[in-house]
Length: 126
Image 1 (spheres, rainbow, N blue to C red):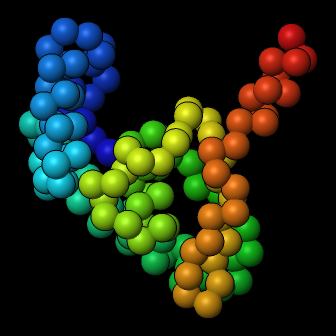
Image 2: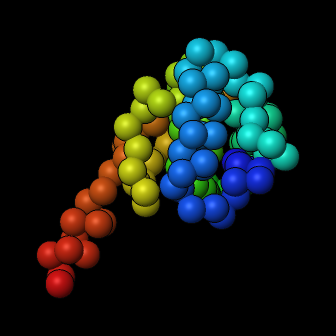
C-alpha cells in the first residue's frame, strides 16, 4: 500500500502525526482516506481483490506464494475473512509472519495465522 509522500520516510516526528491522523480515520471507518499522493485502504483492497481473482482463475496452480508488507496483509485478511476493511487492525500480525490459506468451492479458509516458527528456528541456530 502506498503511503504517498511519506513512502520511505523515517517514522518519526511529522510522519507519526500524519500516520496517527490517517489511522484514526481508518479506525472510524473512513477507509477512503489516504496519505497525500498515496493509496487508501479501499484502493489497496480493490487491487488485492483483483490479484486474488487472477490467482484463483488459474485452477491448475495448486500452490501459490504471495508476499506483501504489513498494512496490505491486514487488508488482505479482511478480504479473506470477509470483514469490513476498517477491521484491519483487529488481526494480529508480525513482520515475516506466515499464513497458510486454502481456497476451495469459491471460499478462502485461513489454516495458519501469523506463524513465526521459522523465526524461532533461526534464533535457535545462533
